[in-house]
Length: 182
Image (cartoon, rainbow, N blue to C red; front, side, top):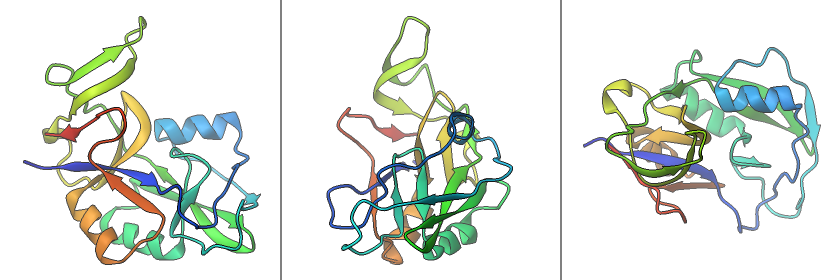
């Protein structure tokens, strides 16, 4: 059974972090739906500069900033047709806004346990099951039906851990008891 993990920005550590990434609403939406952004030139401040700068940081889970080290690891596993990196100046350092271009309609509505809003949009997922046949050879993606989260393969999870990537939290479950296996 293949496993997929959700990639989060680690909070509560003594790392430097970005409080606000001043993206336009249009660019924020493009990030969530996995649409390429033509051009972006951002400079942002960090909230805590006394701590070390982690490899993964950001102002929200949907707007991750990655270091050069993390960018190079991601490029070893993921074709540049599936991800986009946009430069962001963070306290005189260059980070890369990670745009995941894989928004896959892979949520298994029949095998998952969830609630929806009256519009049919996913509200809370108690047990999420992914359609594994749609994920062959894919190491990073967002689930189209709930695109706020970034998912990674076990292979990429192992690589991030072996390379001591800082600022990450890789989880199978979160506070909503949400699991993502196939």
